[in-house]
Image (cartoon, rainbow, N blue to C red; front, side):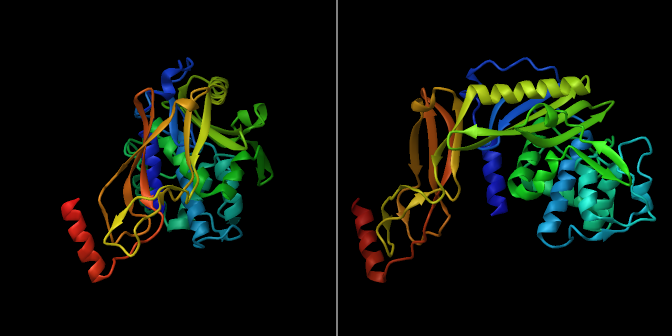
Length: 381
């Protein structure tokens, strides 16, 4: 299932943006940026989204993802105490830290808050060692996970994002990484909305200014090095009809902390004010029941195993037209969730997105007589 969702996410990011970007994007003071609707997976606007950049502490999003996954798989526990290694303690002296000490074991829970809220590089190394034994082994997992997510232009050389020739990414890949974390770990993601955290009697604020400026913002991560400039992944959730809609911005290479917050807020507001996200189909909803040949039943229900959304400029939803393309003739056996065809959403003669359509049920083969009869029918069809 994880591989399927990752493939869907990659497909969503490859959606034609011609329709979405028919609105002029705002001028943003950053080297590279991207705005994505997480609910639909569509890119709303971008500038140099595939420019290679130094991700700085945005790297810690992947570190958190793998720590969350280890918790889910019960490899580590939130209350588990971790012995702090000298390597974690001695991580670059003037970089951001949560100030853990080899003399004092620390819980996984505190390390997560130290990683996410305080952006502690020492916390990153300690978590990496708790999950994989060594940071080097953890880095292998980071790159393996990045490949699974479809982050084709990224590589990690450490768990914290301090500069190195083997640590790089892009706005596109960072958006993929962030949206995967939000989707896969909604409960643990809530840590990103924490405004401050105290450890070792040292209280440190979350560096994401938008947590104070916009009540709809609930994450996500800042980053800064001299080469990277000031970076921010910001995400907000606001009402969208009868449900909520989430938009995420990735802004890389701003000139100051204040500018990265200001420009990220501008992007989020622009995305919410100028676009609507429409639910096209529900999970398990049959969008058609085409004929099946040589099967134990004459028809098969086809659709999606997840809710399907699309994001369009406000006031244009009525222009959408679905076009279903199938792999006819459909011959049994047909496995549940196997791909049956594609659904193209068109508007003004342009293809907006293409989505894989799957079988919602299994269809077994017919009897020998039934298969023979349908073979004759297919010959004369």
